[in-house]
Image 1 (cartoon, rainbow, N blue to C red):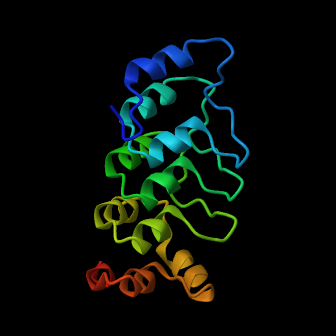
Image 2: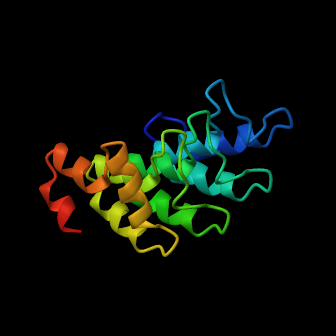
Length: 153
């Protein structure tokens, strides 16, 4: 079971129905994959990623992707799974110029920060420039929430 109490079998039953769209956004532009990634609901993430119509890099109305939601909640396994997909951009800028790295650094999710920094597509220099401009550089943000070790990365 996932944190919301919905089991894998229920997800399979719902997605098996013709009238259920597995990539339909809600009023905020969030998709089922976005919610599953945020909630650490790995069975649903796996099922949704197997569906051809699901865009694993689809941003919501704020420009946040499923990876961004997973990174912001420290969902290491979900982040790894999403990053296996070629269409997932680990450095995608959101509407407010944040990225999955800045979200994971802000909340001190060190393993997710390490995973993202291990990707050649993540341009730390660009992120530092943007975050300094917005006063939210990942290293500074990590220290602001009491994570002095983040700046040692």
